[in-house]
Amino acid sequence: MTLATPYAPGSEQWTDARLLYALEEVVEKELDRHLKVAKDWMPHEYVPWSDGRDFDGPLGGEAWEPEQSKVTDIGRIALVVNLLTEDNLPSYHHEIATLFGRDGAWGTWVHRWTAEEGRHGIVMRDYLLTSRAVDPVKLEEFRMAHMSEGFESDNRHSMLHSVAYVAFQELATRISHRNTGHQSGDPVCDRMLARIATDENLHMVFYRNLLRAAFELAPDRTMSAVRDVVVNFRMPGHGMPGFERAAAQMAIGGVYNLRIHHDDVLQPVLRHLKVMEIGGLGPEGLKAQEELGLYLDGLDGEARKLDERLAARRARIEARKAAAAS
Ligand SMILES: [Fe+2]
Ligand SMILES: [Fe+2]
Image: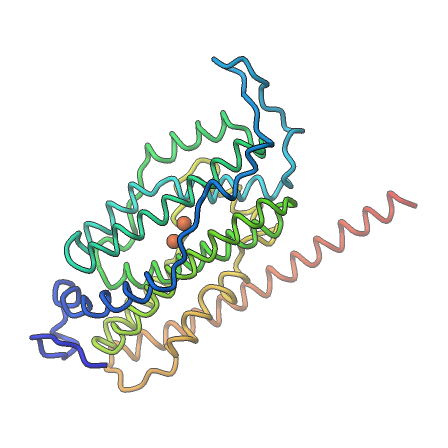
């Protein structure tokens, strides 16, 4: 790839501002590609409006009761976490607009991305309220609490770290939506979340291709950024009320856990970019590559322990069921 840049491509020379400038050409190309492949879709078409009715309050309808929900327990937990994550969009927009800027191709991308993400919160909330899948009062209280906290990116100090983070995070979001849909017990919910997951995948591809270009320009700095982001990764929803408990339940329920994080999120991006095979690195990049490899091995080991614990738990539940039935 040839990139028009007035700066010498020595790794030492790269600052965030220079990288932003050098990557603008790639952003333009990726934005064009994105707009060609992204299909416009209508959130209202995914909502079962005929299932809806008035709630209590000014309209004097029926209050929400848990038995009205068609969604599984794990589906309800994950849907709330995923929707609250989408809800915090104003904070995410602020973070990426501050880092990437609102001018030129970067700005066009930031705004387009924000508009697409906005659809996700709209369709999920409409679905949840119309189908009475979750407690609407709790949902609103959580949304107020979560958004009032705001969101501050762990990677706001570095544009390169931020690109690396969003490449993994968009894929993590895709996988989380997809698995939530599969486990929701409602085909309407599954179809809606599959549609959202398709968007998240295209977002991942955009940032992953940007990350590839960054590796070509500044391999040592990019390797260090990827190592830092992978080692310190946490989901954007970590600040929401009850997140730890919900995350633990989503881990047990197979929506998102260490195994999924390692196999379906980290490895696909790293393999696609052939990160562990990149050669010609300086001492800084080599050290980062080595540390990344060690971290991934450790994570795989942790994931194996979790797999074993979950298998033992399933066996205990089955045994209890069999004993109760006899
Ligand atoms: Fe989203
Ligand atoms: Fe996304």
